[in-house]
Image 1 (cartoon, rainbow, N blue to C red):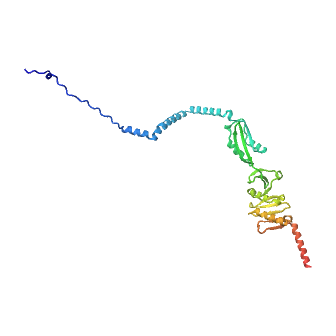
Image 2: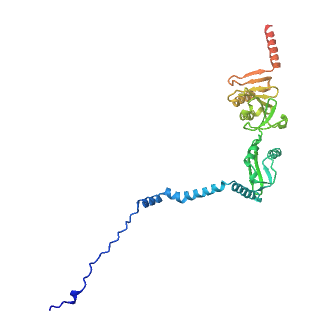
Image 3: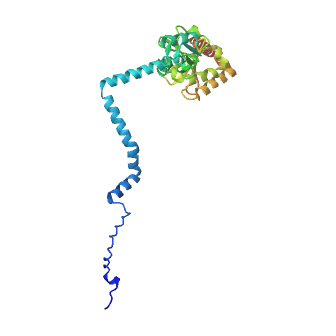
Length: 308
C-alpha cells in the first residue's frame, strides 16, 4: 500500500490578504487656507490686525465709558485737580514784575496798563496779550515779556528816541527819526533842544527834514523851523522873518546853493524876506517892504537928478 505522507493531510494555507495603502496627504493648502495666508502676508491686513483692531477696541471701550455723564464729570474733576496741583507748585509762581529799559514815566504807564495781582501762577499770565498791550504805547519801539527763573515777570523795552517836534493844528507831538509819534507836548519850550517842523504831512518826510537841518550848518543858529507846503516841499523859516522856499526835488542841493550865495554875497544879511528856490535855475528874491520903499526913493532921486 502506498503510504500517504503526513504532509498530504496538512491544512492548506489561506491566501495572503493585502492591507489597503493609506492615501498620501496633499501638502498643498486648501483654497481658503491659501487666501488667508496671502492676506496675512499683506502689510495692510497685518497692520489692521496688529494695530487697527486693538485701537478700535480701545476706542470703543473708551467711548462707551465716556458716554456716561457721571464718568465724564469724574474725568473732568480729576483733570482739573491734577492741573491745579501742577500750576500751584512754587516753581511756577510769579511773585513780582521787573521792567528794564523804560524811563520812570513809561515804567509807571506799563504797570498801570498791565495790572497783575502777585503772587500768580505763570499759567494764568497771558504773556502775548501783555506784550501786545505794551507795544501799543507810541513810545515803545520793541518789547519782550517773559517769565524768568525765580518767579519774576520780566519786561524788556526799547523806547523810541525823539528826534523832532511836529506842530500841526493845535497839537505838538514828538516824533522819532522815522516819523513815528513818541509822545505829546504841552508847549514847545519843554524840548527846546529839538528842531521844529510844521504843516500837514510833515511827519511823512521827517528824514528829509533832518537832512535839511543838517545841511543848514552855517545858518542853523538862525533856523526857527521847517514848514511843509502842500505836503510836497519845504520852507525853511529863519529869524528876522526870512524864508527860504525850497523845491520839491533835490531840496538839499537847492539849500546848499543858497548857502553858497550867502557866503559869497552875504545874501541873508540883506533886507530880503523870501528866497524862492522852487526853480533852482532861476532864484527869485523878495525884498522887505522898507527896502522896497527905500529903493523906490533912491530911484526917484536918480530920475530927478537925471532930469536936471
